[in-house]
Image (cartoon, each protein chain N blue to C red):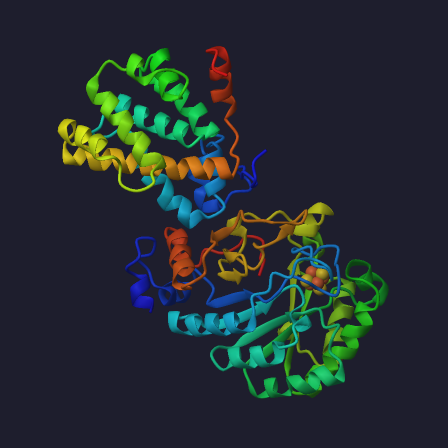
Length: 184
Length: 291
Ligand code: SF4
């Protein structure tokens, strides 16, 4: 049960009608709708950071799912288990990112293992990530990628805490996908 | 500053321009509070003695009046709840009226001689008190508004008039009771308000809006956003499209007509309001005459 009312189309501020035009916009929108002026800037920001960009979809889903698992965010882990599978991560890879399997065994590529170590360090901190983890990233990623991936971890952590602390419910579509594919 | 408003992406127009073009009311409404000594059957805000007060506060109201005058608003409305339950209302309204003309809405049940004495300075200020009176008979009137309401109004209004304070009477009826010609009851009500010292031009009749307790009771007319005159309305909870917008239904604030949660600076909701108004034709107005 969510800690806040998730606004339906007739309850939401009129200025956000477009977000409801295709039906239920999901709990993050339905929560942000309480503050239209923040929803209007937050949603495009989330879209820009989490959506398609110069960094490929697979890489982004590794970051989002791993951050969410590190933060123990049930809502985001549920949602991004499905998205990660759609972004062609294997079942073993998704299990490893969720903390249910061995990362080293699931991810053959050095580059992706370095990224996962970076995500773990950035997401939970505290303080500066270990030098070896930072060096491994610097060797394998350009500055622009490092900036974008680190922003992506930070943004995911923000969403993790938002969804967890407001107890946002997993959407019905996601729930049925998870059930159908055997995710607990 | 109105020039600065024009720079916001939401609003190429200025407030003064929108008001002059008839796109938006020049009056800024302030919800002083939500509690009330009455509990009328059609109350938009489910007001009653024990409800959450949602106070705006005198200092905040003064600050809003300052900003309103700077931004180009031409008048202020104070509503509630029953604003006269607030102990500092006489002084707060006097301060607002030093900035802009003020209309204060009231159920007119609290006007004791002692209170009216404190209101005397309003006689020299641009202050109007708009009181509610729906029916020319105590039984019919009090059925919707509660016991002794009628008597208190007909006793209170002359005290205000004698103190030199301008009074308007607002009558709230079902839409089908409002026709081009006044009914016999409305004629009698006009006789009454004239006898109380309120002129015909200071009597308004408007329909019950189906929001808040009126919606729960199945009363009034359904009003969409464009049926309501755009009149920026600030409450403790945010800025709304119209004074008919920040209603309470089932104990929960309705935010379907919320413009912004934040009201500081006032320029923020003004700018958003102007953005929403863009594209509406000049003079675009309500189809239901809800004001
Ligand atoms: S309609 Fe006015 S007088 Fe009646 S309960 Fe509501 S706020 Fe009070």
